[in-house]
Length: 490
Image 1: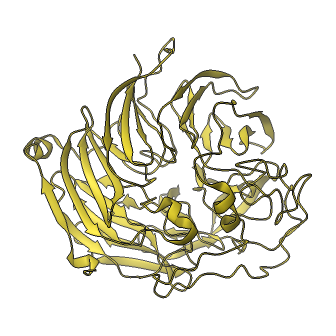
Image 2: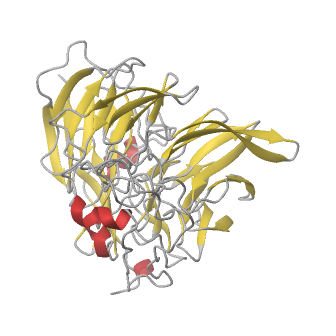
Image 3: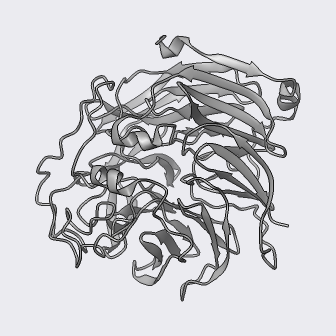
């Protein structure tokens, strides 16, 4: 295979000139320019919910783009899609109105291997700002392209290592810097590159990246990049990369934990997706002013405050009863809505569970992935060994420490959750919340601190859906296993 940093192709179509003329780097309310939207908080501010929801959505177009679970980025009328086709990782720019391809860039790359090969394509969402598109591939390749033409501006492959289950963290663009979590067990880092030139501006070295994505927190005018590693949560200064604060280290896998809840008996809880005893740190931190909410094995809130020349954290609350695994809750009007083996709502002021409700029978979290084969890997029962990952040998489960009391033990290995939760996503669409399960069922429900109230439900794809839905105007963009679909609400 040719060196990846030397192999790059640009495919331009006659629509390229129109793309260049119409492209605008400014983010407006209708845009979804990066992971979880403009502010990385899963809020779709321009969505127009109908007074009466139709019986069915209208499909406008469907385009095959390749394998991958990365959520596309929407800027203006351009949709940027990152996926895998055969032996290449491919970035495409599509016309959002009709799905026609405007340009394409690709480079040769291996995909995820071992048990993680069920998701062999990219997991990290593109970030678009200042006329640039930044992507992070499944083997750690960081690329920056011109958003109007697809021209490669720079490409980095400096670490040659990655987390055990391959990169899932999405890059971000802050003040002209492309910031990404890179490396693996022995060379984990948060790195900032000059967006225009690719020159490294700063690097913080630490533990391996976890599987959530970094977010921005501003305290007293200081911008901090908050990121999960496999052992702790850190905040580094966005201007120079210096460590501002770090949490107490907690091993990602934990120990064997307790015996689990009724019907459990797995490591630290139910035998679903890793029960109470495991926290794969796959949820993105949630920022609310100076408060950081983390979800995984339980949900916890801390307030970060400036104390003279340092930052200190004060725990506000902890809820051990609700856990998530491979999705991030959304905060709306002081309430936190999440997906586990059920839908739940937590009061973000005191951490108390407001309600929980089973998923509708037509919207399981199960079925999008071969859980019996995949769950033991994330449960810590086995670790993928990837001989093609230089400098990144498989991570042994290890004793990991006592593992605490084993968490709440879950609900005993129920399909996709058991107390550890499963896959899925929730988007705040204004007057409604949109929950998308891996079984490609879109659940529309009302935000409420009293009860779950479903408004509508739609089947939006024929193959599994792990990316977030993008809601803009009356449009819903859905990325399934290998296609992008535009639905409209009419």
